[in-house]
Image 1: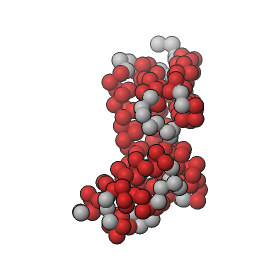
Image 2 (image 1 turned 120 degrees about the vertical axis):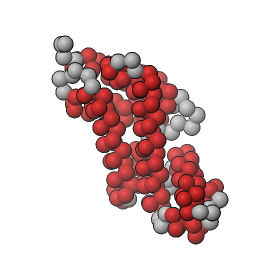
Image 3 (image 1 turned 90 degrees about the vertical axis):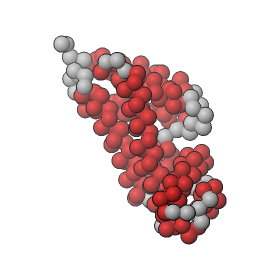
Image 4 (image 1 turned 30 degrees about the horizontal axis):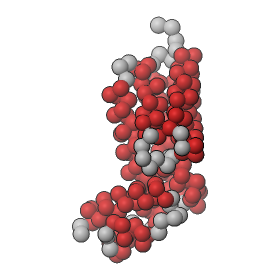
Length: 190
């Protein structure tokens, strides 16, 4: 098996198993077995479990943000519609079979600062989501786009944690209502 093919299989397996079961619950042997990649090739691709977790998170970040952006683009007719659309997408995501919350919060909760590469990947994800939200708030005539983006990120993360813990996808709806209230309060007269 070629290096790139093995790497893709390992990342797909890591995403499936780490997200479903948790990082600590899944050993490298389980990754090897489920991916069909030899142990030697696994360690050639990822010299440590932390390196694999970091790569899994970076890959998941790109895919997660892409899905969010695609949804918002296709469902928002105006710049003002984009912010509530974020929470509509969250609701859709929360309804998916196997939803287990935020992979980044989950991984940080398991590994925290003891895994600097993982912590950096988690921080990067949150920074990139914030930047995306700042792009949305900057496209609307609001008083303070940065402050609104900060507030929206808190609502996104809060809704995700509540949905994961409660098992209720509707956790996105109060956050959407709060986002609309915050947006309305910040809109500047045209």
